[in-house]
Length: 75
Image 1 (cartoon, one colour):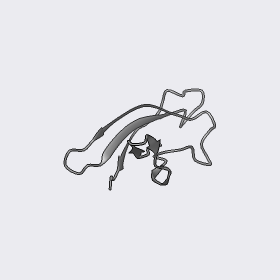
Image 2 (cartoon, one colour):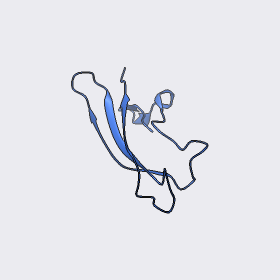
Image 3 (cartoon, one colour):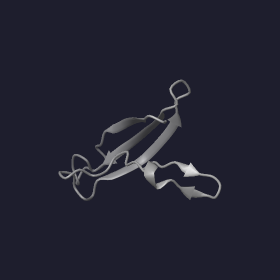
Image 4 (cartoon, helix red, strand yellow):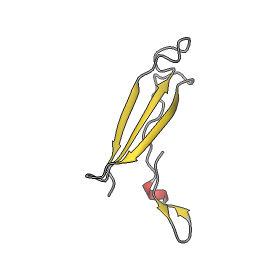
């Protein structure tokens, strides 16, 4: 999830809550989104997020997972 923060008074802006990724209907309940890192692109202002979806292909060999990149446009 990503959300904009209001600084004074401190609060989360509920209308800006956005799910970057979540389990799909065909994903195992054991799929975990983990080991994420992020940065803000200096040129576009986009937030770029990298994460691994462990257990995506096999519960038994859960470490065999792809590494995904998401770009979230900031207003």
